[in-house]
Image (tube, rainbow, N blue to C red; front, side):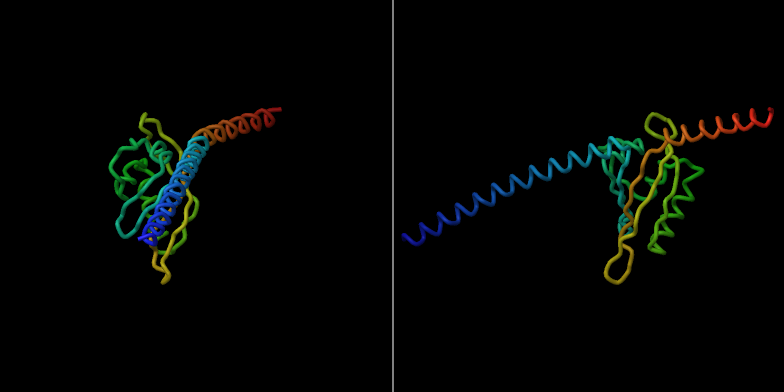
Amino acid sequence: QVGVQIMLEVIREKLNDLKNWNEQLTTLVTDKTRAFNEAQYLTHIGSWEWRISTNQITCSDEMYRILGVPQKHAPLNLNSFLQRIVKKDRDAVKQLLQKAAETKTLTDFFFRVKAGDGEERIIHGRGKVETNGKGTPLKVAGTAQDVTELKQIEKKLVEANAQLEEKVRKR
């Protein structure tokens, strides 16, 4: 009887320890997730993952914002993801992703999306292909950074440089 009571007390203590560790880990995960989401928001970099076997795409909160998709939106598949891309860029991105799955390599790429406010955004994408132990592609994961403002500044600099060169030629 005494032995059973002691064992029950030890089990209670261990369960309490496990409960405390679980609470600490939950707090840590919550804090890290919040910091991750904040970093993505501040840098305008979203992350995404295309599971090839299911054709499903999961996105970070910032990726949804970049695409102009409500976060409570149904999960994306490759086709619904591609529909967010400007028509002129859509086929190139689709071919790039399909080629990545075949060659197991994904290069940096640029594409445009229509954001939720109707404004066209310029996106810099990059990623990698993950395979199983036999080299079969399982998923393509990557990031997408909204570089619209940088591209607008770049365009203004090119225009200003051209104007300056024209003025120099006229002298």
